[in-house]
Image 1: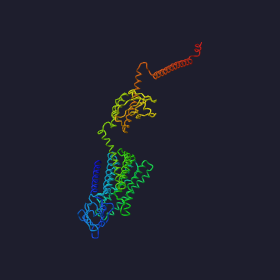
Image 2: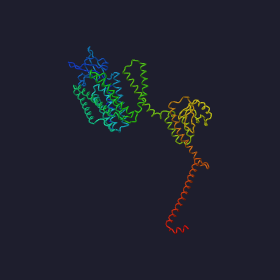
Image 3: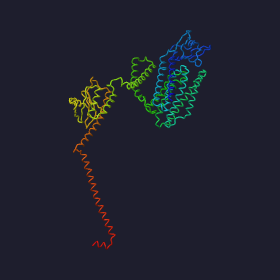
Length: 605
């Protein structure tokens, strides 16, 4: 299976490189050719906004040469009336002047953006998404379908501008992928819900859809052999696409209603929204206007970009763990997407201030997408570089994670409170570059004891007047006249605190430094509490070893045990005498019944 995936990736990359080459090499000319009664070729229509109109090609101009040869020798004109993929072109305008045009590599700005930059970027994004899923969840059969679906979506987006250039491979790829997307979409969810013991779609329906897709590809090849069937084939393919999308919509809506009271209700709602959003631009701005007027309002290469709403809905479900529980970088997507709004808004606002209304809508869209996408990429790269380079390229002073690790290794061997505090002081002085530190204690009443450095007692007492009267927690930093006091523990209703002087450069603590010293003090408080308990336990054990110095609780326990034993012995003695008296009485009663009456009288006398 790994070999199949590698071959598939190589095939996808090969197609992507070929499609990118076609887009770079040949602009979209937008010229429609027709035959005159004399058998000559003339330009019948110039599509607005494309290369032909930008280079002032006139409708009605006679076509003299294509690539240095007569027009009839240009093979693509045998199956299509659209003139595309041309290196050189010679036309005769209505005034009789000949013009030599070189469309090759003479691109328009909007074509380079919408035909090359955006499709290639979206294809790489889909490839990256599928690769991430494969790396982490390739052992699940259901995720393999999802990987294949993301690859096909990327190929569909990239092949759209190539299909507009009347490229045979581009048209085949575009027509096949446009039908394959809803099939893989349904197959993925059939297998997904089947793994949860839920019925989504019958396998026979998928077989029928696959058969229709293969037939559509065969008709696409037939249209190249029989050019007169091109219009009929396009109509059949469009009808199949409408049927496929309507059937997919029906299946999603039916299952949404059926599962509206289950845990998969939200999953289907998100997928249904993403599916309709991916289709609406094509239906409203390309398909319907083309059927009514013969020309789309927006070309298919642009409206096809809306298909990205489909993988976007998958990403959302993965991030929220509603579809597949995947632990990978998309968990941070929501956070980074929110952060990227700020620099994007700043760039857009700055562009408006400096350029005003001189920027075209196309350029606005490019600035928006490029800024937002590059910001997201920068945030991901920053996190990766922080992880890779912080241990190798920067000094220990700013390496707070390694400082915590070093501190934890040092305190493993600590057995006394004073040794622990010394390790803490050394770590703070080394990382923060402060002048000095000192330990002091403060009870609930505010009395301060500073045995280590008594001269600091006055400064700390004066600083105490600014502190809030409340219960402090480990990690709280209290501002002093010089430096600050850090709460590191508590013993017998008294806080153990560490005074830290200002830095040698008189700078304030950064947010990273504050969080680091808060974590350090919290770890120290746990260790201090344990060491205090151990010291108290050792003191009690030492007291027990001293002669004549038994604790009160031990004397009380011994007295209670002796009293219980004395009571038990008294009860045992009392019960034994009574039992012996009863035994003698029963013996006498037996003798009385057995001795004759006369003898009894004698005995009685």
